[in-house]
Image 1 (cartoon, rainbow, N blue to C red):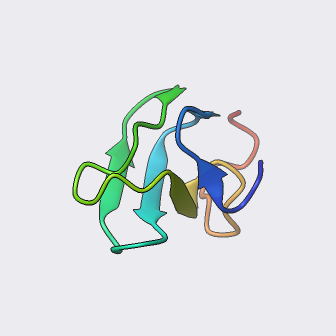
Image 2: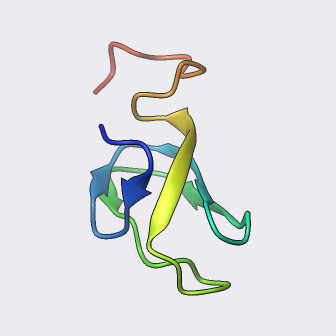
Length: 61
């Protein structure tokens, strides 16, 4: 997965942080990332989930 992750990407459950304002988007299941709800930015840093080094379940993708 790319990092930063662009909005519209299919992502797995986890937390994704806006690279512009720092808003954390919580994703509960595989879905498209929306543009940031706070500032409208379209790029996120993976905090947990996806390809994050902190992903507690790396084999569940």
